[in-house]
Figure 1 (cartoon, helix red, strand yellow):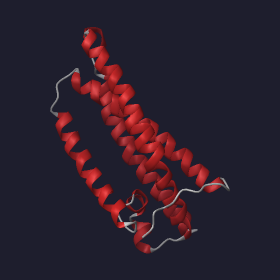
Figure 2 (tube, helix red, strand yellow):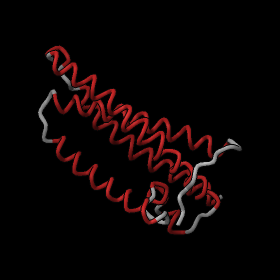
Figure 3 (tube, one colour):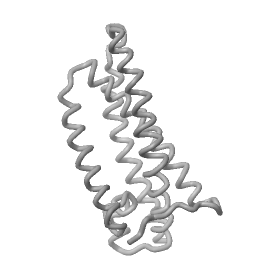
Length: 166
């Protein structure tokens, strides 16, 4: 039972983290003054949506992050410890008890995202809304793929993704 609580906490924590970002960035994207956009702005918006949907949503989340996290959520349900229970979202995202190379990539990627968030926050509208709309697209794709992979991890017999344990 404790394992399923840890798995649920891991999935819920990641969902809240991504959902919070979607909510905050979505507000900026919705504040985009569509009626005053020039052709260049519309082209940039289309590029942002397509690029971030592909790069962040498909390549980043669907092909890498989501299957690995779902595998770690599944692993956690059978291998819970007090530390993993307490820090389940961080365990599932790969901040600890993971292959060393993956842990380094996870930490570096997280730091890079923090820097990019700070830089994008300095942009004025409509550019900030254009970037945020693309990021929201990628994050929504990622959140949906995470839930689908997690359901597959628990209810499918052919889930063969690695939790990348050390």
